[in-house]
Amino acid sequence: MDYRDSPEEAAFRARLRAWLAENAAQFRATGDEYWHQAGRWHVALYEAGFFGLSWPKKYGGHELPPVYDVILDEELALAGAPPRPSLGYLVHGLDRHGSEELALRFLPGMINGTERWCQGFSEPGAGSDLASLTTRAERDGDEYVIHGHKIWTSYSDVADWCLLLARTDPDAPRHRGISAFVVWMHQPGVEQRPLKMINGVSAEFGQVIFDGARVPATNMVGRPGDGWKLAMTVVGHEREPSTLGYAARYRKTVRALAAAVAERGAEPPDDLRWAAVQAEMLRLHVRRRLSEQLDGITHTSDGSLDKLLMTWVEQSVGHAALTVSGTRDPEMLATYLYSRAQSVMGGTSQIQKNIIAGRILGLPTA
Ligand SMILES: Cc1cc2nc3c(=O)[nH]c(=O)nc-3n(C[C@H](O)[C@H](O)[C@H](O)COP(=O)(O)OP(=O)(O)OC[C@H]3O[C@@H](n4cnc5c(N)ncnc54)[C@H](O)[C@@H]3O)c2cc1C
Image (cartoon, rainbow, N blue to C red; front, top):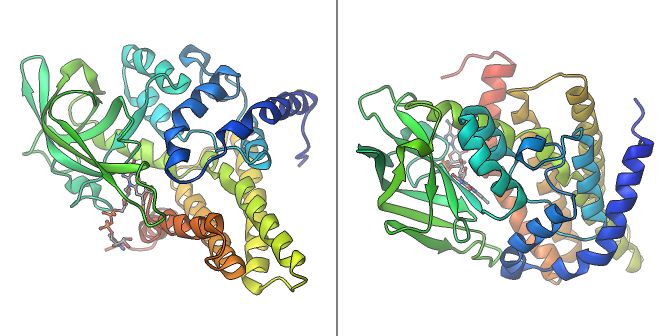
């Protein structure tokens, strides 16, 4: 397998590197400021021709092979720029389950960053057991009326639209009574309450209370009862290798930690050595998954393996950051603290292990 850039890939990398040298610095930020400028960063990246690389042209993408996304991730990490906006799972969810009309209406704005989105799945009583969700959408003429409580909703403070799961048929078996909607967030009956994270950030996610918010029936994604299928597509893509672009970022952190240790004239601690091995393993794993994608091999439950692997690496890097820098370096402390969330978001590590046990290894499940 030859992992070197083709001439086209090398030209793309050079163009991107030059653009980042001019533009990345203004977007370097931490804490809440990082999240406040995320929308501007998205639009800048898109307008320069560096976002939506592998998505269909009809939605404003470039239809390039997925390796271009990896080049993008690598160069963003190298330049110390923010990561690319994480939206792929929503794009796949709407593209696969929405009508052509709905996809053409909503995907271009989602991809070019002029319309911001959030994912309203989890509830206080429905996270791992998502099918127990109780938010309800009741038909009223040409509309549905929504009541319920969503939580851990990333970007809910800035979102224009929410991809929402709600129960439309309380009498159906619980997986079949759920439907998906595209809901306008700036309306009466939608209240957003920010949540402060352990790293001090309060602009990343929040709770959303729906109390009589309305959505046109035409904004249902798919048919009544199709919500669970959409949810499985969305979480499947949330866990897949394309989001493993973070590998480049982990390597960069490991190198920065190694440089800090070398500066002190000390030996690298075991935590750092282990993080370096894991980060390199993840980089090679991402490459292998990409080769498989290019060969037309698709994975379903294997996304759970990828997610678990990524979590292990991120948390190893986080531990190394804490060991090397203690609480002296706020950026490294934030790296450690954020790594704790990785084993929860997009489905917990325990749930990934259950999926691997049942669907990949074929072990009996409870
Ligand atoms: C940073 C971040 C961003 C997020 N963004 C979003 C978002 O944008 N939209 C959204 O809808 N949600 C979002 N989430 C929510 C996330 O999907 C849920 O937190 C996750 O699915 C777990 O649900 P829970 O928090 O309710 O935990 P619970 O389901 O209550 O789990 C609690 C503990 O019990 C364990 N557990 C539960 N069931 C089982 C089981 N069957 N077997 C073994 N162990 C089990 C879990 O692994 C966990 O350790 C986000 C979460 C984080 C941390």
